[in-house]
Image (tube, rainbow, N blue to C red; front, side, top):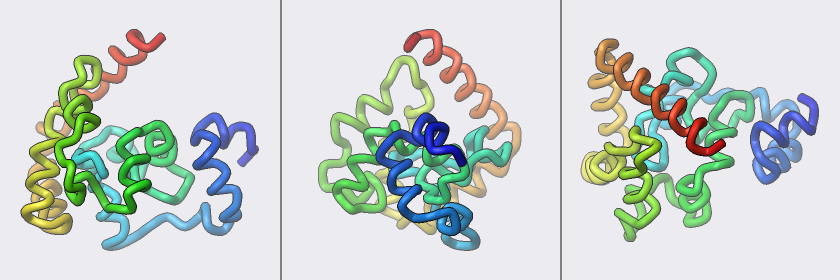
Length: 165
């Protein structure tokens, strides 16, 4: 991939890390249990209910492959930066839950998809990530629910693009 394009997509920090890992490391797409864990976003959302995941463009926002939309999302996400800086798996592991960042994300008037974050994180902390993921996978297997959620997320994206122009 051309260096300039990578910088545009992923941001300078992520791009530099990916370029330093070499082409072979970029091709490694997680599989099995490792891939399932990528669906547990650090902020409390379940990436398996995202349109980018469903249409095959993303493996989950914490994905390290550098080939999917996950790197782009992670590069611009303050929650991901905070979790990585604290060296924890998610906000569920943070003693400050719920912090201002997560509360604001959950109540953002433009991005209405964060409304589940705080309760999802609390539940994930109680159950553990694996049990929470199993529960989420079962819940979102109802395609009508998932498709309504994806439509809502699409509306939020359209609203955000108008708002942030």
